[in-house]
Image 1 (cartoon, rainbow, N blue to C red):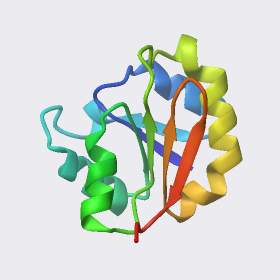
Image 2 (cartoon, rainbow, N blue to C red):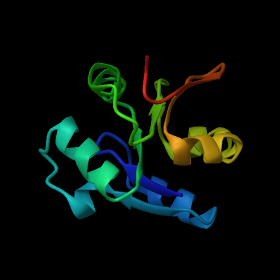
Image 3 (cartoon, rainbow, N blue to C red):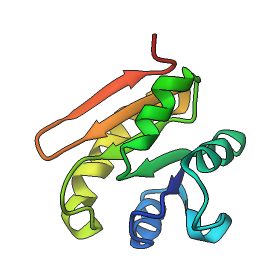
Image 4 (cartoon, rainbow, N blue to C red):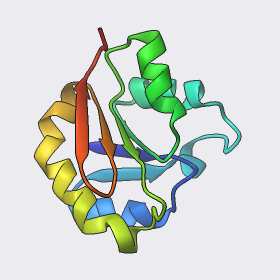
Length: 121
């Protein structure tokens, strides 16, 4: 699995994911930091990446465009630093890895993780 970390999340996530055996890149390394969410989504789709974000707009883009991908992991917590979320997020990614490779939106908060298969109907 390849993960694209959105600008609103720390570059520290790259190391967290790579230690688990996943390929990861922060958007600031591959794209314009001022790029729109739709540009980021198009790049992720074209390059087979799952988008990891704290931005609610990615879920909205999936819903309005009804596309098959890319998959999006949306974190809905106040503290989005790896020190706080690392073990929980790694567990969720392992649990849903095959679904993410097929197309899904996963919303993670303090209490639970919810998954929706793409495209939305």
